Image 1 (tube, rainbow, N blue to C red):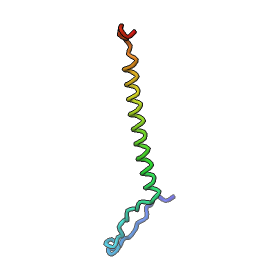
Image 2: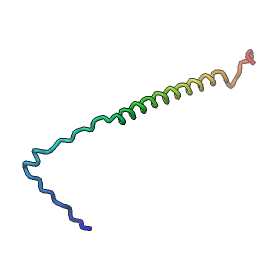
Image 3: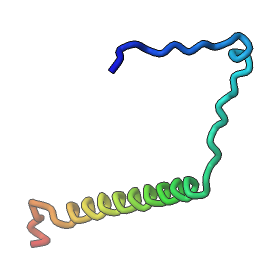
Image 4: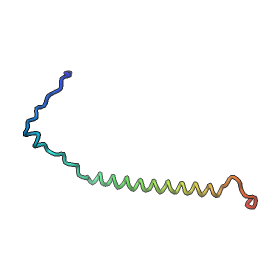
Length: 71
């Protein structure tokens, strides 16, 4: 394999007529993926919140040192 790099000649006219890169439009599949990802994140957040609330409730119900009047 040759280590030499190819040289590309760009004429002055070609430099000014360069085509601009057009941003890719949203494809329906990409939009659907974004929606699914958003809803999945919401569901995960709600589940995490419920887990934390449940854990805190269990901790308050099952204290390590029960009071004598409750025993």
